Image (cartoon, rainbow, N blue to C red; front, side, top):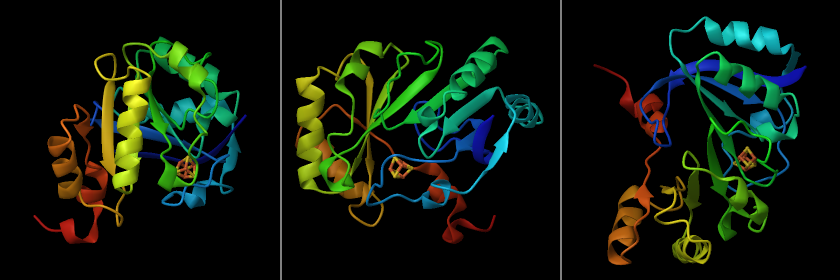
Length: 212
Ligand code: SF4
């Protein structure tokens, strides 16, 4: 059984798979409490479901893209066989995790997006450095940047662990803290080779975006 907060169909707003119609499986529970968390409702709310029920729900949609998110999906051990089954059924599976739990047993065909927590998240140092050894060519590293200090910290982290060149490195502005433009300017001014990531889903579904 898995405790599931929600299963929903939407446009992927992040990662290299941005723009793909995707089924999202949001698990319940998180071991962190990031300052900017916009999914606090996932901490406790949800229902226990059989893996087969989740698979049936996913299969109702045409897409072959599935994103496992949370909360922190890796808190529930049943998530591993769910991802294995999805991969074996031909799905393109991505996993969003803070990297505070081991990814050793994540199916290597899953695109793992490691959301490394910066100092301003309030959860810095939660990342398991041992996860670097389990990363592969599909793995992406994401940093939510809240300030100039976060930017510097992220650059240092990437250089120290030789992430640039080996992996996709994505920098996202923390909404309400820094602007997309500010982050773009920082990337250019500081000669970073990180990729600016704008949370497409927030743009599409914001109240301001209504209309034709
Ligand atoms: S890891 Fe994600 S779900 Fe958990 S507190 Fe941080 S932003 Fe929220």
